[in-house]
Length: 313
Image 1: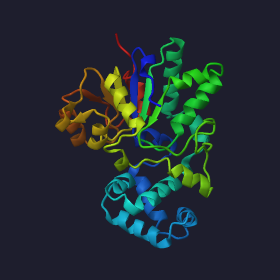
Image 2 (image 1 turned 30 degrees about the horizontal axis):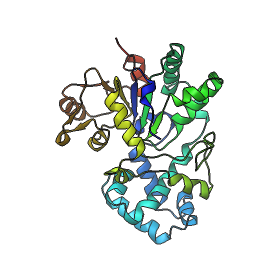
Image 3 (image 1 turned 180 degrees about the vertical axis):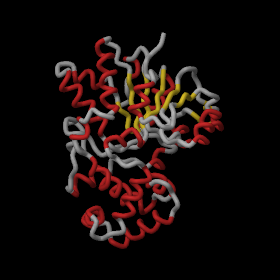
């Protein structure tokens, strides 16, 4: 069901890339790829064993490992987007096998360096003003933000939580690792925890949408994301890599289609460890409309310094 943006007077879209979950230990694209390559090479690795128990043949696992390793693609998503075909299902399963290892609740409650707590403070201020204004667009498969926000709302505002949660939509534009336990009307559901259950891992993998599946026929979440970004007062990128393909899919930048970072005082974002050449290219492409933080600031540091999600006027 499409999200209802009419409930907002003005709103801010937070666009989350892989770096947005890094503070919880989740691997970035390159490390996730390395982990998958290691685990599909070693028959004794838990992921390799799980894949065999899911009825992926040893020959297919070997073919997948060799093709991915030799492809020169920087991430598993990029590889599957180019190849797809017979490797689509095993690729999804391998991603799920690796990512469920990081679903642990204790890191979510650590406050130091955890930008989710900065988010909860801002959400609290907005609730006090009766002015909730966040829409989340995430490229991540993990469910850490979903879990954190649910726990925060239900333990802080138990009598309002259900309504508040509806006013904080999270759009997983590339899919996710299944619905959380409280989403009783959805399937597949799984608690936020690590698991060795083959059924749970395989079911979770089915909820992952490889980017190639979105072209031409965008998912509802991607369509909602484009609509939200188009009407947003502000768009803030956190832990995002500014890949041109993803910017095109979001309807932000695509010169051939006439999309060129429209709007003033609208686009802000982190630039942690981004090369200077990349930031210069982004500045030129956006005609200065994308305002980036410095390359040394994590998301936590960036939010301490900037007032990028504060509404003006």
